[in-house]
Amino acid sequence: MWRRRNLLLSEVANAIGRRLGAEILGTWGIVTVVVGSGIMAERLSDEVGVQLLANTIATAGGLILFITLFSPVSGAQFNPVVSVVQWLAGRLAGRDVLPFVIVQVVGACLGAMTANAMFGLDVVNVSDKLREGGPIVAGEVVATAVLVLLIEGFIRSDRAGVIPYMVAAWITAAYWCTSSTSFANPAVSVGRSLSDSFAGIDPSSMPMFFVGQFVGGAVGLAVASLVFGGRLVER
Image: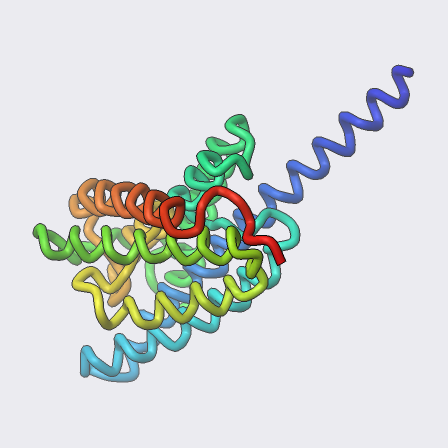
């Protein structure tokens, strides 16, 4: 009996480890793409529009890749707001929320540090790019609300397989249609604060970004519950 119990505990620990590993790797990959492409864009062009376009294209590709790769392991949340929403929706155990958030933030920081190092910058290169004001925070509310709405909507309508592409589609659009250029992720915001580049954010701007992101998450969840209900649509 003890052997079976120990084997079961070992299997559970391995499963948790794989899930956390997927979350840290996925968040690392996405932030490496976001920050790295931002640095490259700055070096290739002085035009802000061209820089944003390059950053957008690379980010969309990275999102599709890493969400598709790690979805079978951890659900590819890569975002504290999404993890909290998954907990509220009953898909993530409460005891797993904090570990998920921690590894997401660590992965995001490591991603920014990796990008900095690849381009010969200081590994930790704190940004001084201020992103302030009510309109920009409103942009984060909208960006995060739609992100959560689409994730919940596709899960609740039994179409989870298209989420990697739909997340990439929304972030591509939101880079251009929101005043904040759509961070929509507290962990990514922390990571991007460590790179003084096109994709960076001054740490002093982050608290209001967090407020906007979590408010947006709440709005997105409420709208998804209203429109799609709490269950999968029957086939």
